[in-house]
Length: 283
Image (cartoon, rainbow, N blue to C red; front, side, top):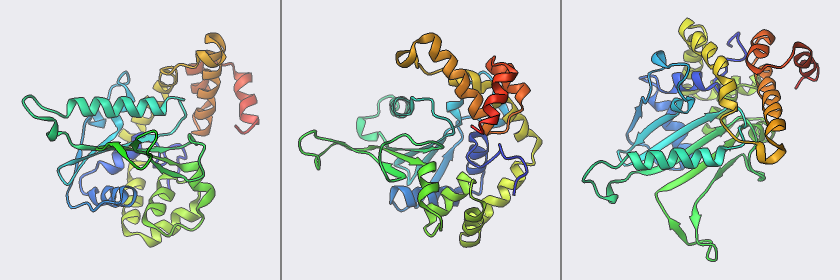
């Protein structure tokens, strides 16, 4: 098991590094087959950004995994650790941007690939019981009539998964136990039952010991403050209160990720006393 708790597989830097690695295509194929209920005959991971060249000022949305399945399906996998209160809009933005850029000059609309957007969330977003939810666009009156095909959104909420699953029997459950990495007993069961998860564990141990990956995580810690304030919360509590609330929420998430208090103080502007109180509350 990795020594640094903040570098879990659901950390977006680790997640992208792990699943975009050459030779790990079968891992992604298994996750996609389980969640989308399709047979993956061919898979190609598009490396939109080389992590080693990632700049601190770049938007971290570029860390998403972009996968071409069977030549005609595009799968976007987003690992979202913190609730920025904008996931539905974020999903629409990415899907729309990818959809618009996927069509080349002189190509017809028939050339547009089907897009499946999978969001793995480290928080609960929906008021539903199921930890895995998929959506379709249907007629408001005739709900069984699908109006628009070719685009679909999937949301996987890890806290719900953690509450509901204690014995990971399916391949999807095994992968979610590994990605979540909160219940070590479940992680061990997943490793024992799934050879691809066992391989992922070995790669994960290597990644979390790699100096370059640790440096990337340091950069992400420095940029997390800006990431939080990219969304708007002013309508809920007023701009001034919304900013303070955002700073506190940022601090809470950084504490959860075991970031040093000195670093949190520097990048949130909160005082040492305030941070110590948050820490005592065990957030």
